[in-house]
Every structure is written in structure tokens, then in C-alpha cells.
Image (tube, rainbow, N blue to C red; front, side, top):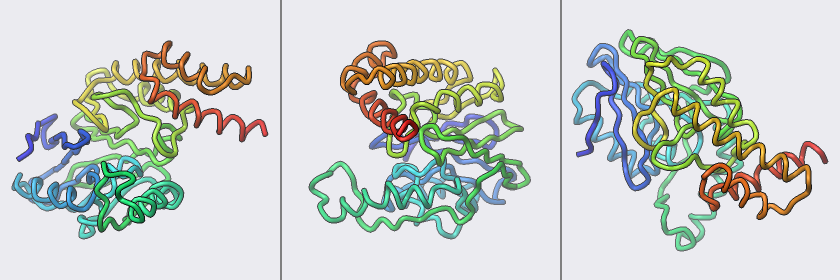
Length: 278
């Protein structure tokens, strides 16, 4: 059994391998239903998660929220189709552009990416998509869903439990490793998203990242600064028409982020700037 940590009254958090995905369970009155944040990497892991939550013996999963579209947070959705699945209105489009083609390529040749286990995955977008702020009643408890601007993806949603002072942010923040510029990232806009969150997160509130242990507002602020360094270097390099590899090395040195992670952010940033400038 996985260890579940009580973050606040009625809010439990656990970290699941193989990639240290954060899962959060939120409830109000016990037995009135639970809200589950994210569903892991595939239907087998989703089924394992369903069993773990059932073993908590605090009620059924009636609501699921996807913090964003990436596979490690949504590919277990099909296990929870008896619940309302909430998420950003852009998830279905992200599936078509990014996750769907990746899944098709893997299905055609699993040996090319053996680190994934996507057998029998059925892409299951939210049944309740949101493009603006919404509220869910979970056992008499108000949970806020706040779609964010483009950052880690253009499908990011913040989950806020006001009475507990807890935020669940998905991969907009990462603690167990550096933030990743995955499929559909917006490296030039991401720092501004974090600064907007810093403006509304209380100094004493708890922030649950997409991977890792809970953090605080100061951590979010530090990560915004680090991502801004990368964004600034991307803009400088593109304006000077420097090769991507040189810009990636400079961004890595200045930000302290690993080169192999920064490279994808620089490439994505160059693509977006080139699209704007023609």
C-alpha cells in the first residue's frame, strides 16, 4: 500500500512510482463522495489507484480533476468513467495534437519506447470541460477549478480548496525534479502564469506539485524566477539568430536547469517566436 499523507483536514496526498506522480484525494463529509486529482499513466495504474483509494474507506470517487492533458495525469481516466471527469476545455484538442499521435506511434511499435505501458489505453477527455473558473461541491465542501493561461501546457488547471488553504497545481510546479517542457509547452509564457499564482496563493497555504512533496508560495516564486531566466535567454538568442544549441547551453548555465531539459524548451520557444515573426 502507498503511504497517504494528510495535508489538511479531508485532503490526502500520495506519490506514485514509476515517475513520482502526485495524487490528491479531497473529501468533505465522509461517505458523500471524493474528488480525485489526476489518474496516473495507464489503465493498470489507474486500477491500482482506484483500489488504493477504496482502501482508504472514506467514500466513492464521484469527481475526478485532470490538472492537465499529459499522459501521466490522464491515461488512467478510463477507469473512473463512473465519476464526473473535470479538466481544461483544451484537453480534447491536446489529445488530438500530441497524446493521440504518441499513443498511436507507441501502439504501432512498443519496442521503440519500452518505458511506456500504454496497452489498452483509451483516451478519455473530461466529461466536464472548463474554459473559465468553476466550483465543485464535494460533500458540502467548495472546491475551485481555475483554468490557467498557457504555461506548462495550454490545458493547465489549478485546484484550490479555500477552507483548507491548499492548492493542487499539477506540473505547473515540480518539486522532485526541475520543471519539464513537455508536449505543448509555452516556455515564454510559463513564468507569468506562476507570477499570477504567487499573487493569489497565501503565504501559509500549501501547494501540491505534479511530482514531489508539497511546497509553499515561496517555492512557486523561486520556480517562476528560474523559468524567467530561460525565457529571457530564448528571446535574446532568437533575436540574435543564434543556434539553438548555443542558446540552450547558456539557458542551462544561467538557470541551473539540466541541459537536456532546457533544450526542448528552447526549441519550443524558437518555434513560437518564429511563428509570431513569420
